[in-house]
Image 1 (tube, rainbow, N blue to C red):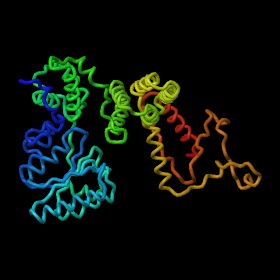
Image 2: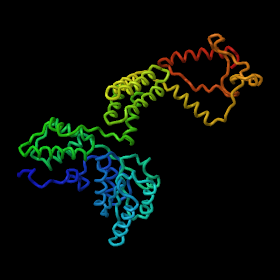
Image 3: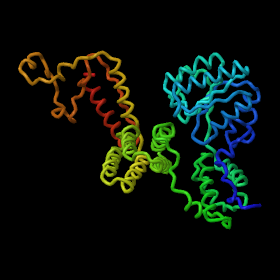
Image 4: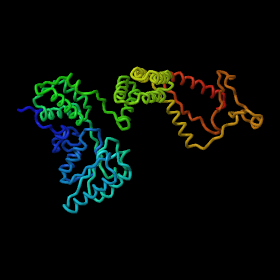
Length: 437
């Protein structure tokens, strides 16, 4: 075999290895496996509008292109990042021309459909309904929020998953056989490439291409790739983390639920994943404080203090030193006694007030800084709690007239709230003995 690197530059691997038939697609077995939704759709020969939702590099564009072949349709692709009304109009005219001249329907593929505004998405609707074209949209964002309900109701949503390590290895072997059959990769080198790819097939192929270019620079005599060679070739690359999309909120949710679930290791994992992905540590600090109030509350008030201290520490030290304080706070919150009693009580009170009419403050609770106010009875018969036994005015009411005690706050039997519950039982016993409640 001749020198691979003396030949004409090959096309980009991601394009050269793009599957030509459905059977060549790696991954998405939940959609393309035997008897699965897209497999059945392709076999039926009857296309339908769809939205392919998934992270980058999992095959959305490939599936759209293959659908045109499977259904024998014209294929028009536009990018919502670059296209506007003009490009939409041109695509519609091309589809009309294909129909009138050749009697052939069209598949219109809109990449990054979430980038289109409402009016641009609405412009597609009449032609989807008339059958001029079958619409296929691709998006990395949740279509529930980013795609108009009218268009969403006319398309089936299919969720595509990141490729697993085994699937990426299968793709790697295919790419190696195609582009570098004479080069030997150590297993550790392959694992490093797969780790850097982070579930993204296109990224894996691009990384492999960089390795190929590095080998080309060294000369044809270089036939062995170890882990260190890969590390030296590739720059450090952050994990996939879209700061405004679903991965962002999913990982925040995972962190919060790991703390709530009292699992410090999982909480640390998600915290470090987000820090590694470039999230603003001050945002994480705010969320950690929220966790302390929402899920721990008065069961362990120290959690709120530690969360606040961690935020202040980060503000003072910055990264990376301040990140240790955030990690320590997450560990403490995860192992602390849990209670959402304060959070639930606050939400219940807020909901009650939002739906209730404005109730006047009872006279005995009103302020009386002037003679007139005193003459009107403001503050009359108010009982100063510190002058009462146990510093508690047993039987006194502090709610609007006629409003029954709602008992919103129900302390749990964990942490400090165990003692709070005991005190509340004692105070209610005093109320009952006073005969005023």
